[in-house]
Structures are given as structure tokens and as C-alpha cells.
Amino acid sequence: MMRSASARRTGAVLLGSALALTLAGEAAVAAVHVDARGIGQALLFPYYTVNEGQQTYLTVGNTSDRAKMLELQFMEGYNSRTVFNVRLFLAPHDVWTGTVFALDDIAGEDGEGAALLTSDRSCTGPDIWTQGHGMLNGYPYVRFFSGGYAGDGGPQAASRTREGHVQIVELADLTGSLASGVTHREGVPLSCDRVRNLVAPTAETVPSTGGLFASGAVINVAQGTYFPYRATALAGFPEGIRFNGLDIVIDPLTQTFDYQTGRSDALVFVDGAIVDVSYDGQHPYMLIDAVSAALMADTLQNEYLLDPAIGAHSDWIVTFPTKRFYTDPLLAPGGAFPPFVEPFEEGGSCVETHIRYFDREQATIADSSFPGGPPVPTRPRLCYGTNVLTFLDAAGSDRSAVLGSRLVAPGFALAPPFKAGWATLNLDPGSEPHAMRASMATGAAGKVFRGLPVIGFWATNLVNHNVADGVMSNYSAVVPHGSHASCSAGESACH
Image 1 (cartoon, helix red, strand yellow):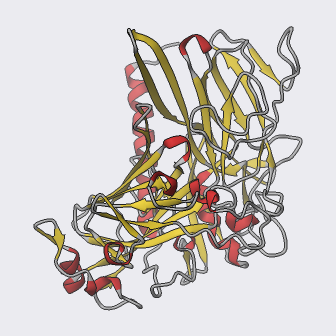
Image 2 (cartoon, helix red, strand yellow):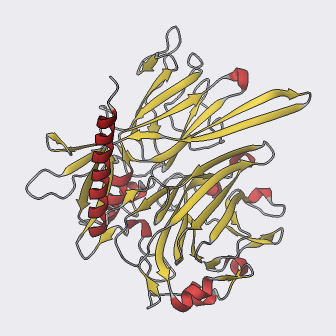
Image 3 (tube, rainbow, N blue to C red):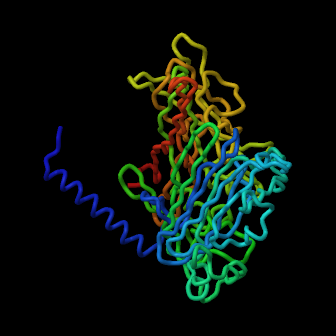
């Protein structure tokens, strides 16, 4: 039944009132949340790669009129160990760009790892222009570090740096002479030395105010493919300065914990309502719980396309940006912690998921075989920080069909009977439930989010061999996942 205009207006007013109350409460108490408009204090990139002749182009921009100090970290895809980090200093309305490429693309470089190239003159600490490992076409590059895998049982070669995920976190705003130092004149900052050697906060470093955006793109120049995406933005960090010297002791993404209140707060959108939660910091890994809560989903939904007639294939990127805090023995000694179930050892830390496929005409298949065909695995195990579900004609490939990833999820395949449609990935299956620990509560049950903290997208590529005689064309696209979150408090829903 169609609602009347007055009913629609009433619904809009109620929604507006709810948002106004939420924002008012947020102003009083900082609470981390995903910013739907893509502007924030922390930026999460679900994927970078240099496999199969590809490069990944990154951009981060400062929309505000305040100078910024940021931390850029690249995490390899298996266990999310840091393979490169650097401080970025952005002037007001400044943008920094960089390209991740394979070292074996450069003549004279010996190695299978990845490196970062930049032509940008924004200040960095250390200075990439003077302390890089080499120059390419007049621009500096730095190799990713491949010696930080001890004790996790994963691959030990430099090739492990070739794909993973990225985070950028704002550490502080800059004022006075520090802001002047990073300000550009004729395209070059006035004095990077004023900022890059900061070892402690000063009167000219003040709490961060946000206003950052970022994007990434996986590019293959030879193939003519381009997969762009927007980074997930987190906002609502508590007021504070998130650095204590040139070497990071505490990952800045954990700095949602407010030591004045003794808790970290999050706002999570669940079934049309805003759920607010608070977590204590009894253990080091729990400092990240507010970020995980903001990213929680019990299911992911997206499309797929698999059609040999048009050269179409699909990859789903499924990244857990906070997983390392719950499963890496260096960060979470003693085993895995909820919502994850296995510590990272012998090269993986797996969670079981269920996937259900639909074609475009309501037909569905879940946990069974295709009609008239062989049994199809429908319980993919996601074992890494960054996972790739690749839609192939048959299981068993060691690399994904679109992005050439080696982080392919085992136990997953899609056979030809459904060449196009959509799927839902259950991150909280009955065979292996996943849930965060309960939030803090006073006189009532704590709130529990089910599923896993996740970001990602669907990447698809189509090949047209018939553009003209001797001419082939690629068409590529990226679509972010849809998701659903659920929350319970004892026997009741959270709202």
C-alpha cells in the first residue's frame, strides 16, 4: 500500500529527529562510527596488489583548513603484519598520492616484493625523497619490509608483501610554525624538517579534527583494466593526540580508547536505528573493540557475473581490518579472542562462513549441489586478513580470476549453471557462530554484535574480443558490498 504524503513527511521528521538526537549525543561523547559520506579521521583500504602486472594507486586528501599529521601503514594480506609505514603531513586542502608496484618490474631490482613510488612533495617522516631505496623516472621509491613474519608460520618470502590492505590514521592537527612548515609554496613545502623529527607532542600539535578522504585503484596498464574504490572512513575518535615519537608503539587505530573515561564508544547502524555501545580496556586487544563494533556485519551481499561468452569473471574482496588484534600471537597472546575463533598459526587463522547464491529469477542454491551437477562447496573458510572469493567454473585454482590474488578462500566455487546473479555471505553461521564480547552494561545485559568486522567489494572484468579486427577491450568495475548488522542484549534486541 502506498503511504500518504503526510505519512511520508512524518517518517522523514522522525528520522530527522533520531539523527539529530544521535548527533547531539555524539557531540557530548565521542563515539567511533563509519562515516557514510566518506570523510573521517581513519581511512581503511580493503585491498592493494601488484600481482599479474598490476599496480595500486592511492590518494588521501585533506578537506579541512587545518594542517594534519597522519600515519600510513601497509599490512600484508595473510596476518596483517606491517610491511611499510610512514608519517604523512598534509597542508590544508592538500592531497598525497603514491603507487604500489612490484620490484621485479624494475630492471636491476632483485626481489619478488612490493615497493611504494611517489612523485608527491608533501612532507613525510622519514623523508622518502632522501631516504628512499632508489629512483624511478626521477621519483623515489621505498621497498616494503619482508622480515617481520617470524613466529606466525606463514610464507616467509618477500612475495608476501605483494598484496594486502592499508590504513591511514590521523595523529594530530598542526598549528603555528608546524603548520607553516608543511604549507606548499610553488608546489614544495616550506620546511619539512620542522615536523618530520617530532618525537613528542608540542604546543603546536593539537587534537585531530578529521576531514580526510581517500581512494584506491588497482590498475593494469597493459591490459587496460582499472578497479577504483573509496576507502572506508571512520570518524568520532575521542579527543586526543595519537603519537608518541617516530616509532609507533601502539597502533593508532586502537586510539578510540578514552583513558579519561576508561572506555571506548561506538555507534553502529542496525535495522534503521543507531545502537551505542561502550567497551572497557581490560586487555590490550580490547582497545580495538569500538572500531570492530563499527565494522561488524553478520552478512555481506553483492552481485557476481561469470559468463565465458563475454569473458566475465568476478572476485569478492573480504577484508578484516582489525583481525590481527584478536588472532596474531604478537598482539593477542594466549589464543584467539571473539569474534574470531583461531589464532594465526601455520599460515592461517580461519573462520567458517556460508554462502548462498541466487540467480536473477529467484532461483537459489545453498548448502547443496546444483541440479544435475556435482556437489558445490558452499562453506568458504576465510583464513587471512584479506581474503578473495573468486567465482570460477571449477574449484582448485591457486589465484583469483580477476585480480590474480594468492589469498583465495578455500572451500569456495561457483559452477556455470548460475552465470549471473547475487549472493549472500553469512559471517555468523550456525555451524560456527561468531560474536563480539558483550559491551559494558549497568543494570542490564551488555550488547552483543554477531558476525565479523569487515570491509570489501566486488570486482568484475569483461573482455570484448570483437571491438574491431585485431582489437580487444576490457571493461572493469568495482561495487562495494552491502551488509547487515545484528545486535542483541540478553534475550532482547538492542533497540
